[in-house]
Amino acid sequence: MPDLIKVAKFGGTSMADYEAMKRCANIVKSDSDKKVIVVSATSGTTNLLITIVSLTELPEKEKIVERIREKHLEICSHLVYGDQARQKIEHLVNELEEKVLSSKPATPQYSDEVLSFGELLSSSIFTYVLRELIGDRAEWLDARDIIQTDHNHGSAEPDVDQIEKNAENRILPHLQETCFVTQGFIGRTRSGVTTTLGRGGSDYSAALFAEAVNADVLEIWTDVTAVYTTDPRIVKNAKPITEISFDEAAELSVFGAKVLHPATMVPAIRKNIRVYVGSSIEPHLPGTWIMKNTKEKPPIRAISLRRNQTLLTVHSLDMLHRHGFLAQLFQVLSNHKISVDLVTTSEVSVSLTLDTNAGTSGIDFLPKKAINELKTFCEVEVEQNLSLIALIGNNLHTTSGLSGPVFSSLDGINVRLICHGASSHNLCFLVDQDRAEVVVQKLHERFI
Image: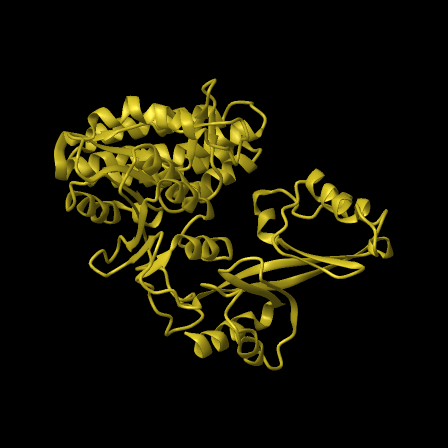
């Protein structure tokens, strides 16, 4: 076994074309401790595959398959091992074509099978790009041989114990001499059916691999140089964060930061694996280290913004001094698989925030049937076009004199909901979407 084990994940923009892949291959070559390389589909490919799943006309599906073929063969044309790479890509695309041109209905299982081709294609090409630099030490690995999941297509739950056993048999004995290139996002059930971990699941896959091989470091290489104090597109003088704790990073990812998938932190925390976020475009620039304990613990480390939020407020006099109302409310939401973020209550009202973005997978985030069911025992009010702003830091629930300066900074801004005290790492509230960026700018100027 090597002294240090690092798992490195490269996202879609890092796999965009031959030049991008070559940069990533050089990052791998520069550090022999990188033993497992997890890659996303080439930029834009997953969107094309989603389009294929949604189409019904076979000629339209075939056109997109050909676009995917041309896109990946173009990258192969630059390779030293071009002939081998082309054969592998042609084989995979032909397999994809056969699947999408069949008369199978667009079930969740069918969708997962189609979407898996994005990562299978990119990882196959990147293996040959890496071989140009490190030779046969680069070995392609089917992630589905390691990442075993349940049957929940589109958002499969991994079987952590079985993943560890699979890695112990397939990966660990060869780490000294091999650099494995594998796929993010995809897995397989015990019965051999392909599944996916959900959009953005490549980070999660990388963390599961890191946990399974007892890695010392998980590296996330993306198109940004670091985790920033807020979105640099909103605040030009946002600062890169050199160190951040697991808890803070988890809050940031949940409340809208796009650098990490929210689930990524869970396996890293379980095994106390340090996480590094860096830029594959400018790898020489310092990135962000995410770890259990940091040297400094500022009250406010960063500010995040999550758009497209909905506020659901229910009113009922039955709540007054009676039990069971909240249980009834949340049972309805659970029955309709509605995910709730924040909750505040009064004597006769409950307000909850819902992430409208949850509906982008084609599932109605707040079905009319659920609203009608709620109306049988309470009044229902739905407000949309809101944004959730979160202050992320440390000991926010015990830091005296914080709320006053925060909300005095927002003079003239209508705050719809405040959630403070449930977590020591965040203070969050809802504002109108068209004022959200102004709020972030004001808070950043005041506190960071």
